[in-house]
View (cartoon, rainbow, N blue to C red):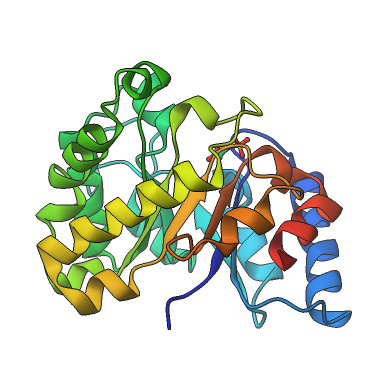
Length: 252
Ligand code: PEP
């Protein structure tokens, strides 16, 4: 059975107090009040709060992920954070390839492949984001773009390494815009992505890999999206920052 997963990406939002009180309240709702859900839940706060977030969620089913790592193991890279640093504070997961990193920090596929390799070296699970721009979609290039992103990054990994991945299909035109992909558009792309995994790695891996949708998910559209046969949950930005909304998404 494929894992159903919901991930909160808080980006560069929330200070210490906001981060810790959200997580404490969230855990209270989910685990003490026993709200029903069948999903793995991951929250990705900012770097300074990873350690405390991880401590608060110890012994619960909530996982904490980082939003990035540097591609080198260590050295003179002022201001950067390495995979081994995350590992040393008990962080097990990292988001890579987010379109904001690709766009604002010029992370190309070759850099992302280096990041993947270093994350794998330290045994981190990778939430790897792919997706086309609105220009590419208007030119009907979305399938080609997504295939190329995978070919140059994730598909350079061995079958054993693929077990460390979650894939997040995030059409750039849907991120933070309020313009969600329709569930048909999302399902069509997810089916295509799964077929690429089938072609590259065979049936078992393609059946088992969790492929999440991201892009303006909210508590109204989550249910229809998560109901699709190749959509295994979501990567949620804005709507993950309101406790009640996020809880409703988790329950969708
Ligand atoms: C994201 O940042 O990954 C994202 C999907 O954001 P939003 O939900 O706000 O579109």
